[in-house]
Length: 322
Image (cartoon, rainbow, N blue to C red; front, side, top):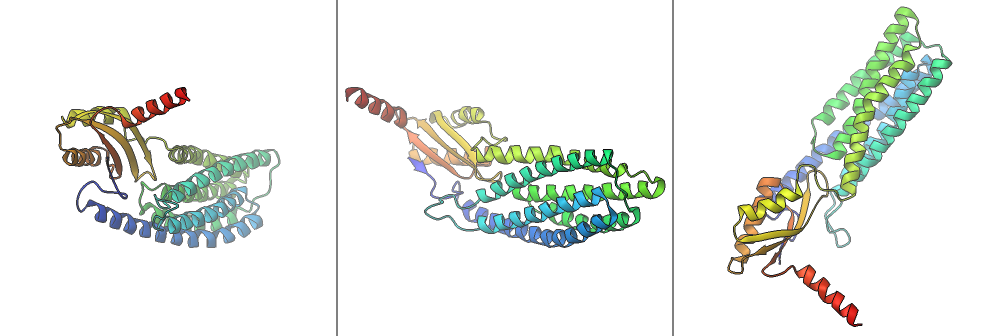
């Protein structure tokens, strides 16, 4: 059997460079999330007080959203800290999945916020509340600036990282909330029509809904060990024998992800008895990296029948004999 002894082992030199790259990107992501956390947490307190004074649902809803965002960013930051820990005997793949767990939790929190904002907005349409447009406008403008800076910080991070995407999505919701509050405040100051406040709150919530659902679905797919969306397992099974003549067939293929950036595969490859075991193994690993971006693979080389099927048949025969 040929196999890896750690993440990333396809070609000389690639392993260490890959690990250094992931470490550097992870440290940058962590720093960006921490700065966004400090900005969001500070302004969240200002906006909550201002929303209560102004009587604005748009501001209160956005402050509530920012409260969960502050918790979400804190969770994302903690996840990056934990994910940087090395693998140990109890967790041989390391702690990378913590980021996916954080993204799943943050996506679920966003869905709950959308429901709450929608219910509260409907209630306010039937029971209007006086809104102080001037106070609302001033706070919303400051919020737009703060959220814009936080959004810029997070957009500069690794866009393939689910944890960064979840944090960015939360901040994007805040940014849209600030824009909605500014528009609502302008309408209220110009016309006195306070119903615009809950109406725009619902529109902002609906804009967040689709992205939040995609985030929950993708992180849930990874947690369920689903096949990465950019890897076709059937194509992989056909490509390896077609590209490497010494390979007769590929079977028992399992593909999953630790995170979206870290796909993993295990497979059995039946090869010609005259073929060079190590040379074929190296070519399969190179193919997986070049065509699918998979740099962590465990490959069982077989010359005859499938070892698992032979073992299973033997166990079944023993059971019948007993």
